[in-house]
Length: 396
Ligand SMILES: Nc1nc2c(c(=O)[nH]1)N[C@H]1C(S)=C(S)[C@@H](COP(=O)(O)OP(=O)(O)OC[C@H]3O[C@@H](n4cnc5c(N)ncnc54)[C@H](O)[C@@H]3O)O[C@H]1N2
Ligand code: MOO
Image (cartoon, rainbow, N blue to C red; front, side, top):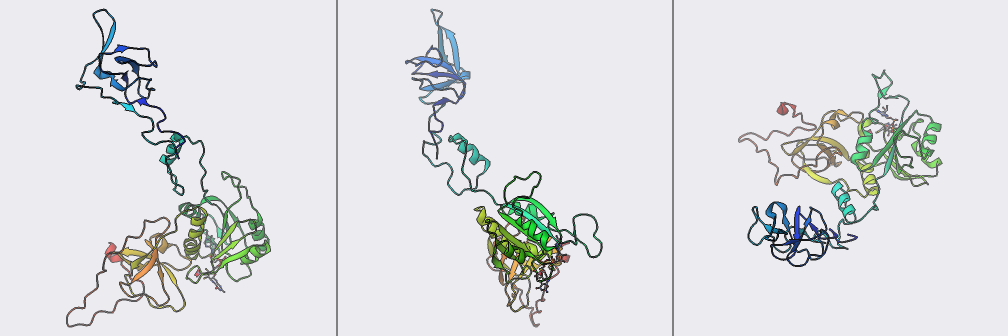
């Protein structure tokens, strides 16, 4: 709320003369009380002295001498009759806000203009809800961060994308650490509250995102390390494909650990479904919207599995992207969003829940009724294709 009236004093909106009453006026000392028919010079933003009733802009003022050789101010130039009207070119105190007026509602995401408004309202500091600081722990001795990997190695797909996605989801990326597959490395890295990262504030992370190690093999240590550190699992797997091994845990010091599966697409689906709400909640951000999009193809049932399928929008309908194996990135990179396909599958044109990608535009609202293909006369309707449709020919 405004700590004082804004503006907090009446000032001139023009360079010229502040006057009292009608002209001609006798010039007075700037800043002194003006009696009727007195005027004093003033600049834009200058304090209106007591008795000041209006401002005559300089280009409409003529300073001359009267018959006795004394200075006298009259209107001239392109001044209109009656100028200046009472109050003309005066910015009144409190015309933007009165003391106590609401300037910025609680819960608003501050933009630069809000900061300026708060400063104008008299604030030196604002209490804000911070964004969560997110550290990345990338695991896997086979993972290499540059060059062409030899067989048995894989190029790291997380280091290049996760910091940006964390930012898009409302977090602050707080550096990344790479470790191999041994349990002591896992334990030490999760225990380490403040890893030193150049350029990153030396604060404990709110969230640690790990990649890999969510599975059941001897090199998958996430759950064991969380347990040994006294943490508890909040989410241990999600009934979705890919991304089902996703883990959300909480450590005794309050840090959340988001365990993303090592498979690249699986990890991004887990980040969108578990990580996005977590970061939104910690940063008081907005939950990612889920909406309906008409399916551009028939998707067969897959009993017991909710499938997350990156899709491309064509003519307002969603068609599953190609190259969307759990270990792939190609389909996601060109996708317009992700369909949440229920285990019983989807019919052509049927609305499917879908969410936008953190880096993509919102999914457009569906049109009133999606066009239905009419059967040609005398022939049975062609059976809609099952599975992904290749629309690439239409794209040219
Ligand atoms: N016996 C079972 N095996 C697996 C199951 C299962 O249920 N039973 N689930 C599979 C699924 S689904 C997933 S997802 C993965 C989960 O794997 P982890 O989280 O344990 O991850 P890793 O085993 O360490 O790696 C899996 C895969 O991902 C590659 N990877 C790891 N980090 C990176 C990186 N930074 N960039 C690119 N690729 C990375 C890693 O090389 C592996 O190929 O488990 C399945 N297995
Ligand atoms: O989560 Mo895994 O496919 O389901 O990669």
